[in-house]
Length: 122
Image (cartoon, rainbow, N blue to C red; front, side, top):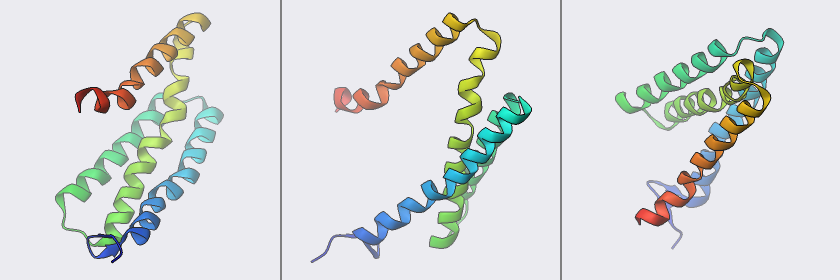
């Protein structure tokens, strides 16, 4: 018997989970390009994240079918990743070169908790 997730087979579920990432790529590239072109970093960070939060809230609060869930999760994921370029460019706008490198490096070390935290907690 094939493994199933809900009413879908595991392979079908795998393909459906790729859709939000594929939809996020052009949005991420477009937001990064626009942020570099205009030099506007704060709004290019805030607006995609707010749109992603609204889509995630919509997915959590409304009874949705598979298609609308994929659309909402695609918007949510695109909103999260579209803000990365602008977010990582902000420290260098008001910090010196060495201070910006230090802040980005310390943030990267802090992100390791996402990798090691589940193993330490269990």
